Image 1 (cartoon, helix red, strand yellow):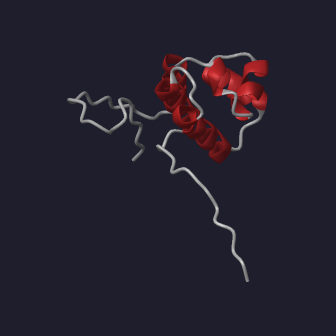
Image 2 (cartoon, rainbow, N blue to C red; image 1 turned 60 degrees about the vertical axis):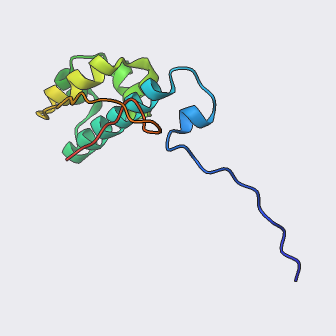
Length: 108
């Protein structure tokens, strides 16, 4: 049996950087924050109107959020959503080490 060799490239850990997009780290950060906002909202099993009231946004924006269109929201807005969902955000500033990303988001 002749097995063809599959070529692949190892990911950097940031799909946006791998695609060569500008602001890849910001896009990654917003994606991670947005994902966690959506997970917290799904856990509460709220209707879109309730989510809109809770987050202080229009119902149409809720639809964008829940469908993963996180680029429509700034990092600050996503952080505000986390605050409204009773989650604290801790920012740690440290020297950058070669090879590591400049932005990292961790949830505990």
